[in-house]
Amino acid sequence: MKAEELRSVQTPLKERYREAPDDALITLRAQGRLGEGVSCRIETGKALVEAGLHPATGGSGQSACSGDMLLEALVACAGVTLNAVATSLGIELRDASLQAEGDLDFRGTLGVSKEVPVGFQAIRLQITLDTDATEEQLDTLLRLTERYCVVYQTLAHPPALAVARKPVTS
Image (tube, rainbow, N blue to C red; front, side, top):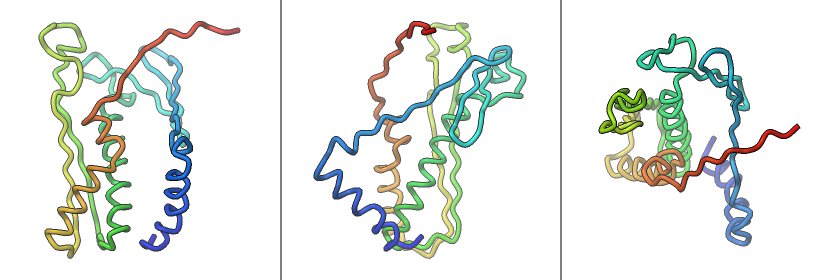
């Protein structure tokens, strides 16, 4: 996709959202259902994924780990954002690869230590680019990728979270 094509698709949306800000507020949804053993089946819209325990918590390694899925979502979102920003800026990328890694201490999630937090303690996103872009262009590309990547910004600035029990309906 070229910059003009991307602009032709996004310009009417941007105009609409400026005129009717409520149209820009979309609720994304995900749902799952408990599966065999200690697992949860998730419909991704493109495939069915079965998430289970990580081997470090007693899982077999046959199911997707939710922590891995979080990192994969970060890589996917950052990759799409990077590509869109490069396209908008007219920066040609011959190739780009992204890698996310996160540090977890499983003593937290297993309840072995109350002092150890549950969840990632650090997440690192590395981007390798094959391009002739200048350092200034690359700085702009990475700054805007970070700024507009939904998953990155959600992790950097966590939203209010709530868990509620929904009654079974027949």
